[in-house]
Length: 347
Ligand SMILES: C[S@@+](CC[C@H](N)C(=O)[O-])C[C@H]1O[C@@H](n2cnc3c(N)ncnc32)[C@H](O)[C@@H]1O
Image 1 (tube, rainbow, N blue to C red):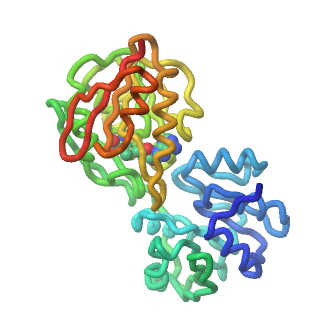
Image 2 (cartoon, protein in one colour):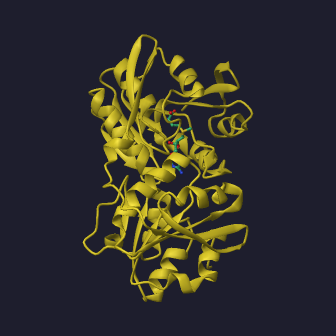
Image 3 (tube, rainbow, N blue to C red):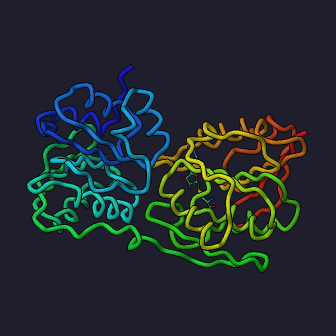
């Protein structure tokens, strides 16, 4: 079945603006737009995504690895694109990051198309884009808008280090420094829920530990400092998070066993003494529970005998019935400021 989100439908509706020789698509949605564009064969198409879910879908649809960059940034290409298509992102800082990364990639006289849902604030980007050049609105339909930017200002070279931020936190006398990048969960400070989770981790962690949805890597890194000798794996769907996690591990002198790009548990191998998480419930601008519900349903199969699952979540989320159905019990370890820490033991 051919699936196109509303922003992609708006692009297809305006197929004349897609006439180009070399197109770079930045942060496409999890749909069939890119594979359709490749199949048309009229332009060479490259894609940049920070989402493993999108990367694996595109690979399944036959988009070749050579055209696909999954990572925190895309290097300047020998043959510069004449057209960049940028899908609107929720975080303003991440949008600024993507613009700073993609504008120097464009050939002279190239153009950037920005598409996104009206409800996600695309209209405010008409003004912001004007700082880079001439902006024209092409179309508005399917609750979305499409703009074209023709840059008139020469962009500065992109330097990823300019976008790195860090913060320090102490929990139970263990200090960690965390490195973050734009778009990574809770840029700049320890989340209230994450702090509550760490506060319950005073004792009892050893062996193989998986930090699911690691973000900037704070939970796993804190555990490795508190319990030296654990074998730590950290997992996230988001390549920005994985880049931040690698850096957080490095500056805290932690050597993880693995840093895994994975949509849910898809790319995880092996079994663990503990799986810990502040799991996701947002995707883009929409609330999304399915990833975490599936993670909870599959988590038992990842645990060694007597292995433990420990998560923190907003107290209103209906996770306890799922954990009870899988493990036969669900213990509440702490509750504060609207967050609850749950634990279940395998067997
Ligand atoms: C609430 S944040 C927690 C981040 C970090 N552990 C902390 O406590 O600061 C949830 C994380 O899950 C990641 N995530 C979202 N969807 C995912 C998926 N389908 N598979 C794996 N990770 C996902 C997000 O990128 C985000 O980093």
